[in-house]
Length: 79
Image (cartoon, rainbow, N blue to C red):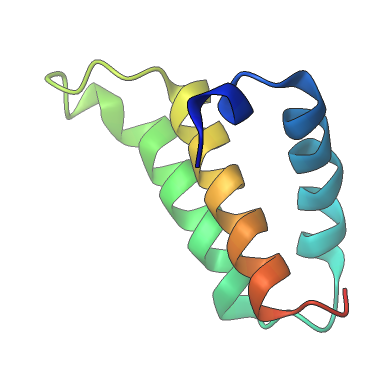
């Protein structure tokens, strides 16, 4: 992925629109949905126990969202 794409507001608006639709879709198995939810929740809770990781919670969540949307769109193209 190009760095210019990561800075694009159009690209991130696509990501933010697709995540709720993909999470609510009955065609995507629960295990695939948990691949986004569990790491994001753990990272939001565990930084208190992992003080040496200086990445912002929102940045990690956005990167996870990006990964989830790309994976779900590639794996389930009909959604």
